[in-house]
Amino acid sequence: MIQITDKEFTELVEFMHKNYGINLINKRQLIEGRMSNVLDKMGMKSFSDYITLIKRGNNEHIETLINRLTTNHTFFYREDNHYKFLKEVVLPEHESKSVTRNFNIWSAACSSGEEPYTIAMAIDDYFGAKKSLWNTRILATDISQNVLNKAKEAIYQEESIKGLPPTWKTKYLKKLDNGKYEIIPQIKNEVQFKTFNLMEPIPTLQINKYNLIFCRNVMIYFDVNTKNDLINRLYDALVPGGYLFIGHSETVQREKSKFNYICPAIYRK
Ligand SMILES: C[S@@+](CC[C@H](N)C(=O)[O-])C[C@H]1O[C@@H](n2cnc3c(N)ncnc32)[C@H](O)[C@@H]1O
Image (cartoon, rainbow, N blue to C red):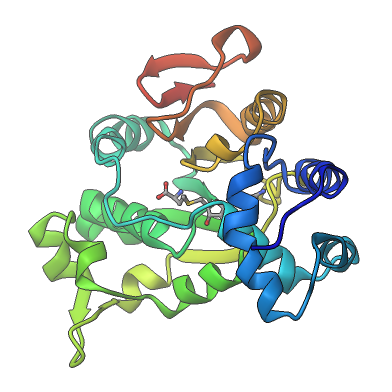
């Protein structure tokens, strides 16, 4: 295994933190363990050469590094109380109050698309025949082009869809000959995928801000300051009364943010 020196480790930690918000300070062993064979395959003998390469901004290598040290793991209907809250509280509230009939959602760190497609299914299921009267927009972003390509393909293994309500499976998925499942066009067309690094200024829609932001299971990789800063920027990107859903293992420091706590993993502007 290729050992990382103290100097290389500090350099890599600072680079990843500054540019991607990812906190690797306690991940020395993980870096050596998961990156050694990547370096080997590239014919590199030390981390220095690799760090020089990623500092030149080689996206493909940076993506590999992020993918190795974080996880893209996700599945449909994950943390189902968010989808229940969406159907039972957010959508009825919005339906009764909205004058414009716009509903803008952002799935930040969407990985391979299971999260934004579940949101699209929840919305379609809620509005039913009235859906065409609503202008719903789901923006889904991730730093990794790899997962976004998979998301756009919209084909999934049975394992990933098993948590979905059975009626949704029937309504929104088509079983393929190879045993995989494809998202039907009506749901697929609801989601727009884009590459986005959460450390950059947030892409607000031209006129409207977001009614709801899902930012789940990504902040666990960020340090406290990066996380607090991101939460404040997410606050600014929401309409007054808008909701933020975070992962159940994540927290918003209440004294550092203007969000109102609603219930575990749900906050409101
Ligand atoms: C575990 S997945 C979460 C997927 C989904 N939100 C969920 O909860 O199931 C974390 C995702 O965060 C992405 N990610 C990591 N750092 C990021 C950053 N700085 N900006 C945007 N996305 C990032 C990773 O590429 C990965 O796809």
